[in-house]
Image 1 (cartoon, helix red, strand yellow):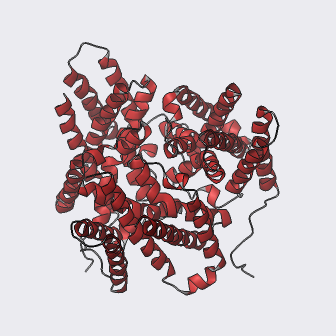
Image 2: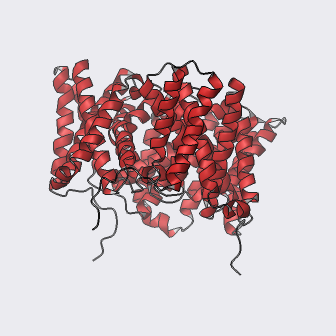
Image 3: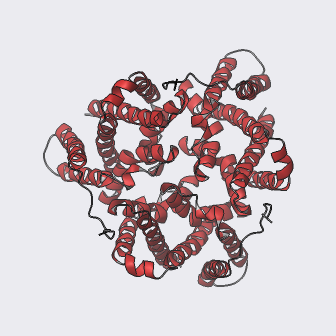
Length: 204
Length: 204
Length: 204
């Protein structure tokens, strides 16, 4: 199981690196700017998680992540035209990263015996704060606050994982089902343009 | 005394949650965005403090805060029209949070035997960095840098607390006097539109 | 050697404080805003470094830095006209801070026996994230992402330091050569308007 999680973390880091690099290229950053935004997006959530729960920061302990992320950024730079052509590419990579990192975050919270609510918060932070840091650094309002009920989905997936943990399901499925749940739910939400109930007055 | 501080921390967290929620609603964030900005505003300063001094992050240890904050955000959402009607509401809640969190921060610094100047800095960070994070996340220049000599008041209150600590005053009063001092001073400053001496050339 | 580093750190903190104060004054912040932006610029990179590697935060342990930084900010406020007159002043102070803090960061990484790549990343963070925080707080896109191949130079200097460490050179020279390398390289880059290869389509 630990190897599965390691592989999924690499996929998540790689996905977030691409999502960060694409955002930075939209803003016409130079090559280094693209790499550093890719890096921040990929490690931001996990770094904040590790600092909050006073664990060694994962990419300092396992510096291989730095290479995966730089590879992801270079991949995005090389294939930038092709990636832009597939208009939803940024969304796909961002969503895969969100799903994987949310559940990894909840899992680490559980291993430290945090309360359920804290595990959910740690999961949401792990999954979404890389994207928040990306958006703050490129001077946008973080997308999770404005659209696509992004973090709500992250919370739903984290809660599903906590529920599945109580069942007899095998650990790989327990892990993968909420990841896939998050990914599918986000695609549905984006496709059908579902949003949270509007709490503001309509202009009509 | 510890119970008094606990109750005051809850009031402070609740106040900052409302201030964050009101700011997010001004920016037309969706419900989750409102909750997360409320959360960041309420725990931001204390979280940075706990990370800086390498203490367990308070809301991970006592997850009840998460519920208080969500309650504060929901309260702000439900009563948003009434709260907006009272135009100074945001200021009131922000100021109560500032006063309480500044002095709690100084107190924690003292308990770790930091130097006086470090205690003041830790107090100011505890009191004002939730608001800084709120403003950065909604893509404003933090209000404490531009207006109302906000942090200057926080420094003044923190210093007053250090002075009162040297006296024989009972601990509850020693704690409450600087809190009330900060709150009243900020209202005076806002009411009379006092600002720090202008260091720029006048346009005349 | 330790005394040399201490003195260089003070010079670096003072330089970054001036660079932060000048930026804040361009944005017409009030006096306190100027001081806090100076503070953030001067301690931001080192604070993130200390948090990442779980070291005591340097300015809480040695609060004298707080005084040096406030002195730097006041110096910048008093001499603001003269400093603005020298148009490149901000660049000079920023570059001196970048060079010193990068190499100090790498050195601390080495002392903790981090991998080479992690040492370089820690050095770049120490050298450049004070400036990143300064720019985020004043609501600009961080200059290191957009111009002057700032961080690329920081990486080059950090790598040079790692190489020199393998030689028999005396420790003071090993330390100072990459610092001076960073400073000179940045001036050359700015003077000749060198930039990284453009990865975007030209408009012609």
